[in-house]
Amino acid sequence: MTAADGPPRRVCLLTGAGGTLGRALTAAFADRYDVAAVVRTPRPQPERDTPRELFTIRSDLEAPGATDRVVELALARFGSVDLLVNAAAYSVWSPLVGSRALLDSLPRQLAVNLAVPVQLAAALAEASWRERGAENRARNRNVVNVSSIAGVRLFPSGGRSVYAASKAALNVVTAYLAEEFAEFGVRLNALAPDSFPRRVPTETVCDAVLRLDESASTGTVVVVDAEGERVADILPG
Ligand SMILES: NC(=O)c1ccc[n+]([C@@H]2O[C@H](COP(=O)([O-])OP(=O)(O)OC[C@H]3O[C@@H](n4cnc5c(N)ncnc54)[C@H](OP(=O)(O)O)[C@@H]3O)[C@@H](O)[C@H]2O)c1
Image 1: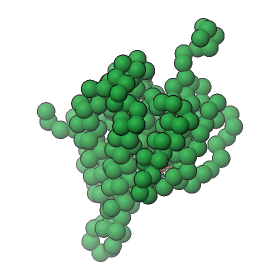
Image 2 (image 1 turned 60 degrees about the vertical axis):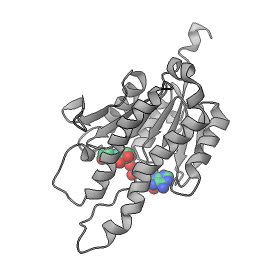
Image 3 (image 1 turned 180 degrees about the vertical axis):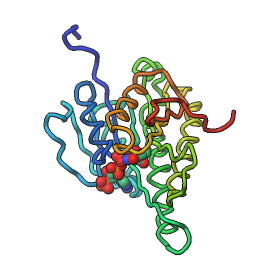
Image 4 (image 1 turned 120 degrees about the horizontal axis):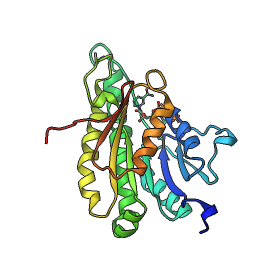
């Protein structure tokens, strides 16, 4: 590599790539990352915001075997993954009583918001990371689970009970898995933004993802709201 080549490109596996944050992150990644972008519904990305290597994987992540298949495809294309960003989400806000909407949505909210991020981390660990501790540390490999401030503090419900619980569970599982993944040099953190772009610019959330990727942090839940960025307490130690 010559100095003109700049720092080596990183490989990101990104879910929810067709959503508000996913599209902004794909653009933010364009200069320095190759991206395996998981979309359920493909939408064109503006050319100027397209990474040099953008590999789109169309997948319904709730389907049986989908998370293993996504990891297999990403590794076949890029050989390794430096950053996993779990940004896909499913949310239904409804009262529990007087409607079936919340009960009927419960399995899918827990599947997409909790099970899928855990399954993807497990699939990457099994297929690639667990035997490569030195390489993982050298490449500062990590997982960013996009959670929500709703999983950190209580708001007037607005029907968000199950969504908030799925994100609180994601925060806790992130903190526990950080200890396990430290054995082979992979970091995990959760990012808990306030509403974007309404209360926080989407670019600020993207910057927080990039900062977590560059950091040495692990096992943290980082809140991003109008007051800035801070590490939240999730469970008393
Ligand atoms: N926006 C906010 O105010 C806010 C605040 C706090 C936290 N968050 C969190 O930030 C993350 C990104 O939010 P966002 O606003 O960008 O969400 P979004 O625009 O709704 O995008 C979420 C994406 O997840 C994908 N997805 C859902 N179910 C899927 C499945 N079964 N298989 C594959 N993909 C699936 C959706 O694909 P389709 O387009 O095909 O449905 C969608 O593109 C989420 O984790 C969210 O919970 C958002």
